[in-house]
Image (cartoon, rainbow, N blue to C red; front, side):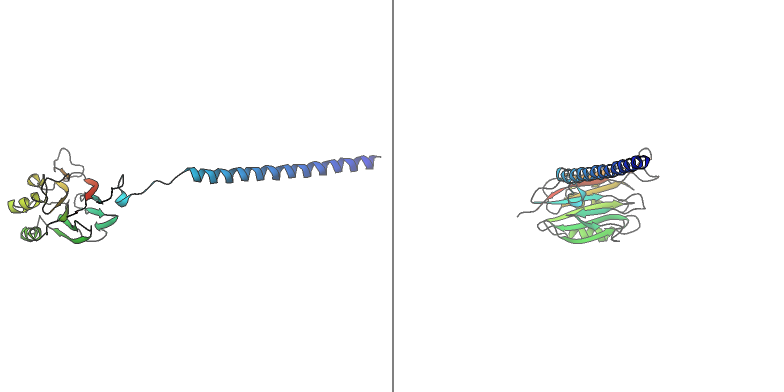
Length: 223
């Protein structure tokens, strides 16, 4: 009788064990199904943030070129110009330098025609004046300062840049930061310009003001 009772107890324990294992597997499958469904439906409901050209905060409408640019940082980091999601000038591209950095863009196609920089501290203003005089009508002109962009500027050079739509060029001084987008043949002052004075009271760096950044949409030339 005792042996029979032991067999019954053992059988009950085995059945209880198997039942516990079965329930555990069932709970595991239910949990996995729930996680899978949650991931599927969650991914359907969520969307990745949209990235616009050059990292702009919003997309440009048709008939406009997206741009984003920054002035140089002190005398250490060069300026950066991005147009239509392509970096046109930067320290990494090794095509920027002290002074005024300029990118010329075809106003109809958005194609970069030429990039150049002119040292306005130790260089000569004559090559800059020649460069500005040779810009063709309808060309978009993008400019960014690095270190000092004003010491060698004279009235002739300032007037040529003012004719491109700049409002700040006549006030640009030693180690000021400045970024500008204008055009040859523009009839009004450009809305795309920022200027900050070199001032000991407000400078972010010792001897230089903070970096300027600007983004926008340049209207494509239609005529």
